Amino acid sequence: MGRTLKIHGMLDPHVHLRGMEWSHKGTFASETEAALAGGYWAVLDMPNTLPSTVDRPSLDRKLSEIGTQAVCDWGVYFGAAKNGNWDQYNGILDDVCGLKIYNNATTGNLLIDDQAIREEHYQHWTAKKPIAVHAEEETVLDILALVRKYRRRTHFCHISTAKELEYLRAAKEERLPITLGVTPHHLFLTEDDLPALGSLGLMKPTLKRAYDRAMLWKAIGDGVVDVIESDHAPHTLEEKSSANPPYGVPGLQTTLPLMITAVSNPNWMSPAPWAHVKAMLSTNPRRIFGVQAPPETYTVVDVDDEFVIDKQWLRGAWSPFEGMRVRGRVREVWIRGVKVFDGENVLVKPGFGHNLFGKTA
Ligand code: NCD
Ligand code: ZN
Ligand code: ZN
Image (cartoon, rainbow, N blue to C red; front, side):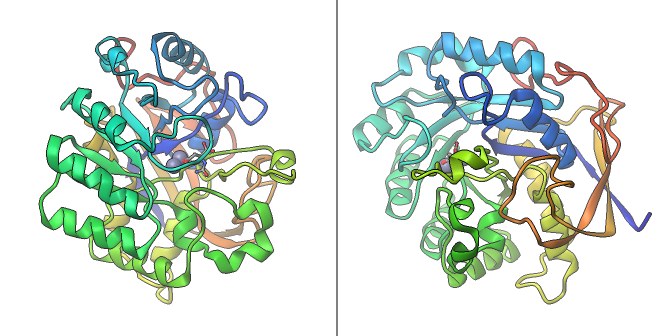
């Protein structure tokens, strides 16, 4: 074994676990197993599932299915609906990690492009829990106007362009209550990879130019980026190779090795200090969502172990990073004093995971 690092309570605040009517893409069991294999203690599940998490019955169905299947700890988002579902808020606040608003088109049917409806959601949502937004380019400005007016803590998901960073840097200087996340695919891939990747390189936001990617790394170096989020969004290879491929790529298993690879390579664009990368994977997301890691909850990763991301290591899944040489192998994951992953196998049964929010927490 090479040099090892210990990371406490890794939390990915942006995953799409599938399950329910999309169980052919993945289940709450299979995707939380991918989370453990990726070194994560906990994940927060987005609401653009089938059914969408937009009312009490759909939330109850998700809570019950994820509760019986999850092997890591978890939380779920409530989804803002375009027909105005704020009348549901009072009844669900205790059971969710936050609200998600989709302001640009992507997977699912939760797009809200009417600023007046977005504003109603901002008006009705609680000050106690954050709002996460999918907002690209100029839409970032529309959301910032609402943050300025209603002062609701807002997390900007998967920021991918230099322009968006410019807007959000200015908003941070203005002291608006905002945070932002970036994904490994926007940090490691660009549109130049699209010919080789084909539809496996299709996701929202799309892959951008090398200049945008360089600005993302610069923002990490400057401490402007708060969170590395995988935006884990599995689809089957059959769906991805169809005439109308859906957007999204899996990422839970590859995020930690990719970040360790970047940090340990002095030739990489921006060798961010390890302490900062670790914060973006654990303490920062925990602070944003107001959760504490339980005692004896950590990941041991061998930072000297180099390997190629291939189908066998991916446990049957696919990845846009297949063929890439990385370093950083997860050796052990512990949750609440229980060894849950030994580097090869998940050691706990479905249902081991706790809800970090709500009655069952
Ligand atoms: C996500 C999905 O498939 O659920 N797709 C994606 O391309 N990232 C939705 C999203 O995060 O926008
Ligand atoms: Zn999104
Ligand atoms: Zn997403």
